[in-house]
Amino acid sequence: MSKEVLVVIGHRMGKGQAVARGVEKAGGKAHVIPGMAADMKLGDVMHQMNADLGISFCGSGGAGALTAKNKYGYPAKAELRSIDAACTAVEEGCKVVGLGFMDVEELGQRLVETYRKMHGDA
Image (cartoon, rainbow, N blue to C red; front, side):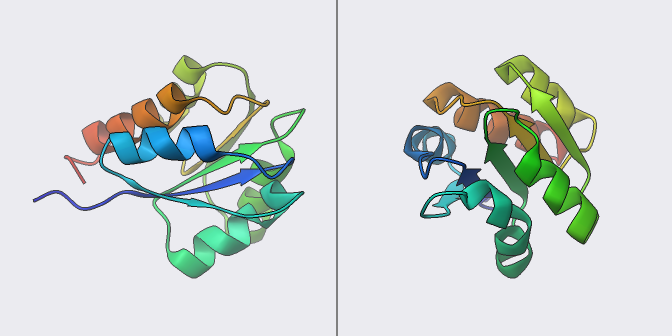
């Protein structure tokens, strides 16, 4: 049986539920950080939970992802503007992706599928 992929989601406006549904649809486990400015807590929560992936949402698509990279050394790509770009970042070895406001199920589902493909079904 494949390992459950744990994805932490931090959204500047306290959202992220649609992405979480997509993660779970792909068989992953999603943790949405509650509250405003949750993207800035992404690295800390990923570290505490030993997460496989982190998704940061803010207007620029970078703040939480860059903070996680700088504080914990997680490979990250920020300022992404599409689902394909986020999946490519995971294919390139990134553990954290930073996007503009894109709280859609397809993103969560495809990121988990991409992670599994890259890690031998995790």
